[in-house]
Length: 269
Image 1: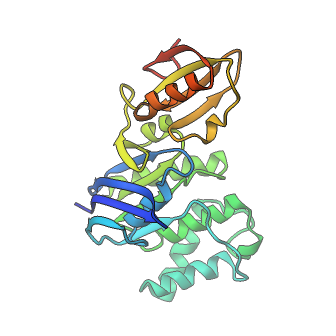
Image 2 (image 1 turned 120 degrees about the vertical axis):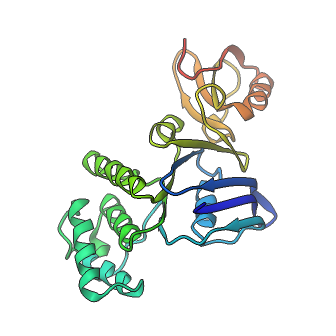
């Protein structure tokens, strides 16, 4: 077992974010975690990476970990290559190995402007490339990625997919988050949905459902807990986590919406 969380909880100012999360990750496994914005995905990954302590529960395993936050901070004057080389030295690499590995990763991710570009001049997508490079620099045993494809161009997204596959074959455990359940399912060997601070298996049979509504009062459905996507048309189509289905339907009825359909498989008509 590379890393394991048992009954992990996390609260901020008495507000619960995670409620009894169990998650185990083994060598060579790619695990995807889906969830809406604000569902606690980033909090969970920070605990998994050892950067934050849980309010309750236990964690075990201390693998060499590479971590990429959802937005990599790149406001420094130094160049991408200098920054990565310095991180490599801090992590125990020689000066030559640091520069070599940094240059190889920046070349593979095709950093726009080249390795001597100052960090503060990078776009969000290129800053993300440096973030990926720093996480991979020292050969992690566990790679933790928070929405890693966000902001990347199509070519780099493909490169990242290849890198994840290669790492998994070499025995590295990879855990990533994404707000798209279908994507998380397709890019992993095991996937979960984080809803109301709890993890549940993400599978086509039980994870989500489609609710069609007509009329009624306006509501911020996109911001509601458990609603994964909203599509506007003749009818309002909600993709909803099954765990929140009944409460969403109750609210819809209270808002005088007509419930046209509730389908167990998203997208089926």
